[in-house]
Amino acid sequence: MTTIAAAAPAHTAVEERDITFRRVIWRIVPFVTLIWFLAWVDRVNVGFAKLTMMSDLQWSDAVYGAGAGIFFIGYFIFEVPSNLALQKFGARKTIMRITIGWGITCVLMAWVQTATQFYVLRFLMGAFEAGLQPGVILYLTYWLPTHRRGKALGIFVSASAVSLVVGSPLAAYIMELSQGLGGFKGWQWLFVIEGIPSIVAGAAAYFLLTDRPRDAHWLSPREKEHVETELAAEDQALGPREHSFFASLRSARMWALIMVFFCIIAGNATLVYYGPSLVKEVGFTDIKTLGWVMGGIYCCGWLGMLLNGYLSDRNKEVRIHTAVAAAIGALGLLLAAYFLGEKSAAGVVFALALSSAGTMGAIPVFWQLPGRFLSGSAIVVGLAVINSVANLAGYFSPQLLGYLKTTTGQYGKGLTTIAIVELMATLMIFMFIGKTARVGK
Image (tube, rainbow, N blue to C red; front, side):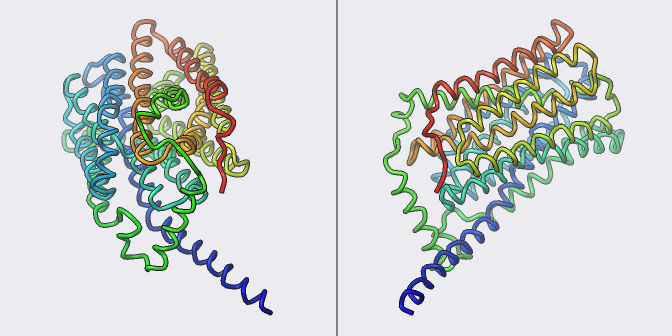
């Protein structure tokens, strides 16, 4: 009798903590996921606008590639300051500033007439959005221990793929149905209609987000204790980690993480900014049809994120799951280059779907790696540095593809080059990321 009575409270305490963390997840994760969804809709709608904007404004692929890529220069410059601002001023003010800023910039894209205006606004888009992804990843560490954070992070990151699945046909229909309305082109309405929800969501962030568990009026004192206790226990269980960011820069592992993500982003930026153009190249000229095709391709990316995240959690392993996914992404790009040469529409769609599943599937699993090696100020700045430096690939790969398309008249050489770059991610993981990069309770 004594044993049974003693065991009951322990079981109840575990259930109480589970209920607390489910409440935390439902309060935070859906909203930050919506914010990330809107960020991607506004970031990549230029890929669909390109289909008619370039002919209207008489721009070349090189101009478009430079404008698509310069987004990541602003991203690179402002990402670390943005993460430091989140730590100092809190998540709700920082996310509000980020979201309203890029929403306004997206709307202003409707009035672009010159290449210079295009470059400036794309730079500002990147500057405003800088810090959102690593900022949210950091923000989740304030609320959830690792063994509760993996699925939450997977849901958040997968919003980028969902935005492409939904956003592709949505962009096509907006452009088709709004063409000529009020004297605006369809691509102009695309920027206006998709920018306004971000402005509204940014204003809502100030009221819906809470900076830290201790500030959460929606948690009871007992629930706050649950959160703080688990976070403290995890910090102790993980043991010594690098707290100094500058010390972490002397580690080959830190630079390996940066370069691995750089190579993955090179493939991802190619899919995002040139996917519609590659599909159009093999005969899908109707914008609405093209939108549905791209939606299907990006749906494979979303499924790749969910499947790879599930397998990684089940196997409690991230290194091999990231490496294999990146290799599949690279193979897809190589096949896309081959099928473009063969003028095979089915082959190109299959190849892009394969690349999407692999490339996008690698991203959420990759983000489980840095927290295994960094903590304190090192992870605050480290997450931002990894993301900002790696995202420079988003500047170089569209430029490279645009330049080679302009000079050679085909996409094949550019796709092959970027496929090789993405394959380097797999090789560097096996060479520089240790087998100890495992996850678990």
